[in-house]
Amino acid sequence: MIINKFASSDPFAYPKVASWKVDKDCCSWDGVKCSEVTGHLVELDLTSSCLYGSINSSSSLFHLVHLTWLSLDDNDFNGSKIPSAIKNLSRLSYLSLHYSNFFGQIPSEVLQLSKLETLDTDSNFSMKLQKPSLRSLLEKLTQLKVLCLGYVNISSPIPDILANLSSLIDLSLKGCQLQGEFPVKIFQLPNLQMLSVRSNPNLSGSLPEFQNKSPLEVLRVANTSFSGEIPYSIGNLNSLLILEISSCKFYGLIPPSLGNLTKLTYLYLNDNKLSGELPTAFGNLSSLEQLDLSMNDFSSYDFRSLSWMAKCGKLTFLSLVKTNLHGEIPSWLMSLNTLAQLNLSENELNGPIPSQIRNLTQLNLLALNSNQLQGPFPSALYHL
Image 1 (cartoon, helix red, strand yellow):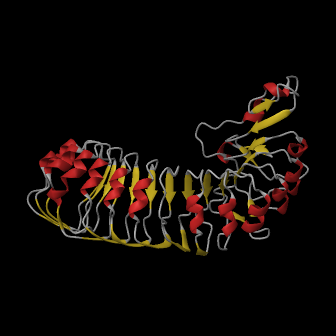
Image 2 (cartoon, one colour):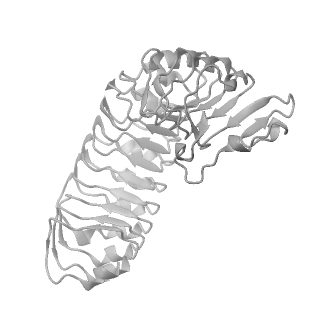
Image 3 (cartoon, helix red, strand yellow):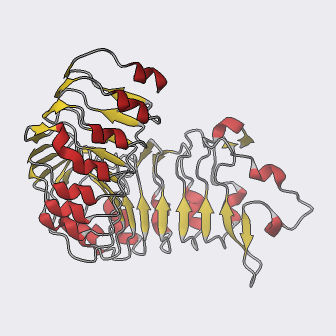
């Protein structure tokens, strides 16, 4: 193991272990925390520590048998495997190996860490969980509150027993090559705040009837085979901050109850088969920062009639590609002066580009292609 400044993605990363001095109490070392009662080393945080090279079972790390908390996030372990000696750290409640270039099968020894409440192996793109399987892991690690396996190759259905983990707060299974039907009972987990199964194109499912007082804050099922209508009861998710259901197979009307979700900051409904009219209740979403309604089958709209969008004064990203817009670019759009990206391409907009577009001083992307715009090219664009 060596120090390599390129082994971490954080531009502010620094090698914590380089500051460790053998003539000082290890409990004073950067990234180390000891128990005030026993003096044992109980927490080790080596996040973004520029560590490079393989790690194996002979590492002195696995002699720290009193550890309850370990983070090796954002280092580069050069395609080595998680050592089987991980089982020595039987007191661990927190284990995070996020984005650290581990390789291969998650070892069965991880299943012996029965006190784990957090397991995060997210963004180790060459890892897999097949033998043992996801089912085996869920049967053994029953105290989990955070399970993040993003981009670990699982290649199986999601077991129904996942719905038994009533303590689960955060579940991320994005890009895991999941198959089959998503167990609907997972949506009903009483403490679940974050759910992401996006980028699993062979995973099917539908949105359930949501209950009042659901704690869900993040719901991402984009790039899956989820289908059906968006239930009216989605308006019960009044803690929701992010709703990402793009590139799925949803159809039908957008329920006006979505306007109840006044905490929403990101709303992605693009690339589905949604139809009908856009609810004016969207004007209640005053916290929205990103809105994408592109590539649906909405009714034809005079763009000027969507003036409720002007109430979304925090928008930085707005995409309305191929949404049957016609008419002129409205003046109210120019009041959204926080916009950084605006995409209105592939519609039937006509008339001039308003000179007031100079008000959108934060723009770094503007797409107006494939419309029927006319008139002189506005010099105001040169001021952006």
